[in-house]
Length: 223
Figure 1 (cartoon, helix red, strand yellow):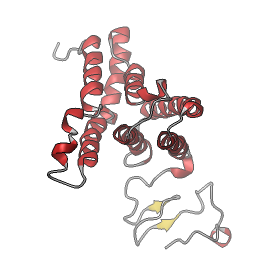
Figure 2 (figure 1 turned 90 degrees about the horizontal axis):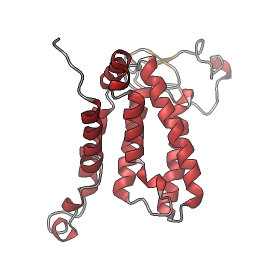
Figure 3 (figure 1 turned 45 degrees about the vertical axis):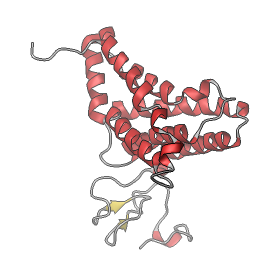
């Protein structure tokens, strides 16, 4: 045997480590008395960029498909993609368990990174396998329900506006009309509801949301 399964307990512990260290705000680096000596701003973006790299690696399509296959082969001994994604969601959105407490700007950034990464997997680049698409869309639906349930208990205005925006962003990600162009779009390919590039043309015949050119929405310019 050349390939062996990483024990499920070790994978779970690795996720816990990343949630506690990579995707939590590194407070020991956020020292105003030091930062104000070297720059007027920038720490939030540096933390956001670092966390974005971790989130992107965690949610790689190939990684999710490996988890799917490991579960198919090894059953309960594997760290299933449902468990993996659920642990990630609960860790990134832990504030939803205590909605009366404010969500600070660092954590709001972490949560936006989560949404942006899922949006990228679902709506940009290569189309994900059906298994991955179903898993990610399911996570977004679960998160949306949790956000809606938490909003009435949120008293901090910035946190409430953030969660309302999260709700709307999830709706946009899941809306088929928000699908971004894939593949060669922007280099002369056919684009549906995504206009980009000087040679792009609009496929009216195959677009279920548009009519023929003489009856398309008058406030949409197609160049």
